[in-house]
Length: 392
Image (cartoon, rainbow, N blue to C red; front, side):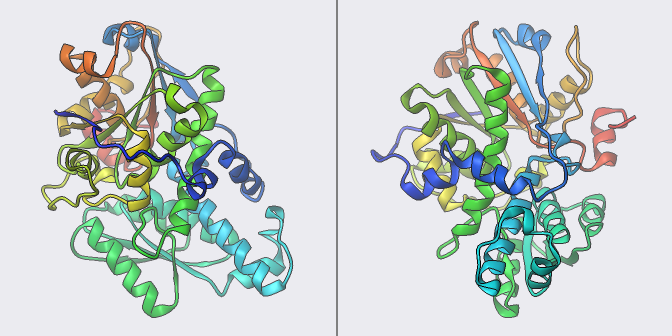
C-alpha cells in the first residue's frame, strides 16, 4: 500500500463546462430527468460509530449505493441518465420542439427513440445502467463485455433486453472495440470514459453521479473532513471531487482516491504528474475498478480537486467487505461488493499507519465519508468471499 500526494496541481480551477457538468447546480439538472424514471428515492447513508471508534476517528458514514434504482450500483445514476438526455436531444431534433423530461416515455418520443442504438463496454455496472435506460426509453442497446465479466453480471444486463457482444482482451480493449463497432454501424456510444473528440456524453454520465454526493451531504447535514472514493477511470472520483471543489473551494474535505494495486492508473498519473496508462496485469477482485487508462476529462478535474491516491491489495478489499457484513456493536449489517468496499479498505490501511494518518490529517476528530458503490452484483462471488449469502 502506497499513499501518493498530488504535488503537481495546475493553477486554474474548474472551467465552465466542468462546472455545468458537476458543479453546484448539476444535481438539480439530473433530478429534472429522474421524473421520467421509475419512482426514485435517496439511497441510505449508514452511520458506523462502532467501526469509527475501532479505527480511531470521530465519525464514519457509508453511502449504500446497493439500493440505487434496484440496479445495485451508483452507476444507475450515470448511464441511464445519459441515455435519457440522448433521447431527449434526438426527439427535439426530430419533432422540432422542446421536450420535457416527463415526455420521454410518450409514444411519440419512443417512436423516435426506436431509431437509436446505444452501445458501450462495461465491467458490469455501467452496462446494466445503459441497458436499463435503453429499455425504459425505447432504444436498441448493444453491450460489449470482456472475459473478466462474470456470467451472472452478463445475465443481469441481458435481462434489460440488451444484445451482448463478448470480446477478447482487457476492459480498455473492449472500450476500443465498442467505439470502433459503433462508428461503423452508426450507433451512439454511451461511455463513462472519454477520449479525444468524445467528451459530451461522459460529462453527462459524471453529471448523473452528482446526485449521490448531493444526497450524502444533505443526509450528513455538515461536510465531512475526509472523503474516500473509488478510482477506476476516474469518472466517479472526478464527479465527487469536482463537486466538492465547486461547493467548498479551499475549505473542501480532503479527497483520497482509492484503487486496486493491480489497476492503479490514477495513482500512477498523480506520481507522474500527467495522465498515465499502465500495463495490463493480473486481474483484480475489484473488477469494477480494473481500469488501466484514466479518462482525460476526469483526470483534468482530479488534478485540481483531489489530494491523495492510495492503492489497496486484494485481501484488504475482501476484509473490508467482511467488516461491513459482520458488524460489531450497534453498526448495521451492509451488503457491499468487492469494488464498493475499496474505500473502506483504503481507510483501514491508512488508520493502521501513523505516518499515513499524519500525512492526510486523519486525527481523532476526523469525520469520514465512504461510498459503498455497489451491492452484491455477483451474488455467488460475494458468498465465496464473505462466507454467507448476500440477501438471505
